[in-house]
Length: 171
Image 1 (cartoon, rainbow, N blue to C red):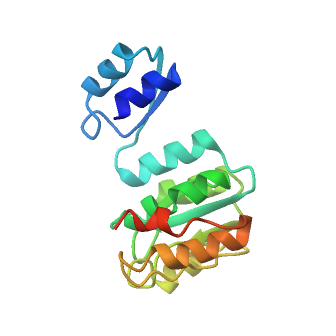
Image 2 (tube, rainbow, N blue to C red; image 1 turned 135 degrees about the horizontal axis):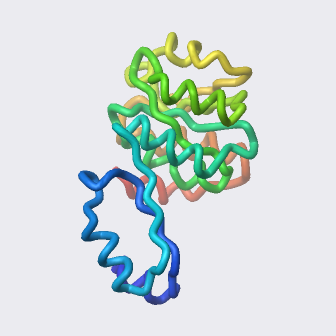
């Protein structure tokens, strides 16, 4: 299905997110065989550094990001569409703190606002407050099955409607 889509779009550029242990070099070979001439890879030492590398690449033109748990990626995947539409990179944190690479990226991108897309069971209130940004609203996601509804409500308030069935397909 993906190969057919790449061919139909006559894609010439692809982005691989993750190191070679996460996305093998064979994927790059397959992309090139489909006519993709430019393959860019963004990766880091771990998922936190990989998310930071992607964030540095896409920038944060609105000086806002989305913060998700790096230990449970369901919320990050569910919010990826709305985050992309708003040009907000997704950065990852742990339950009670955020890695130095995340802090450095927040500073580099001059971020002053973040939307936290996990409940306090995945990202504690102290970690949210430690971001020390002007605005850090939280989309309270109680569990992975309930995550799409609050994410949809939060992001629809930012740019109109979000199809509620789209994030639901992730569960």
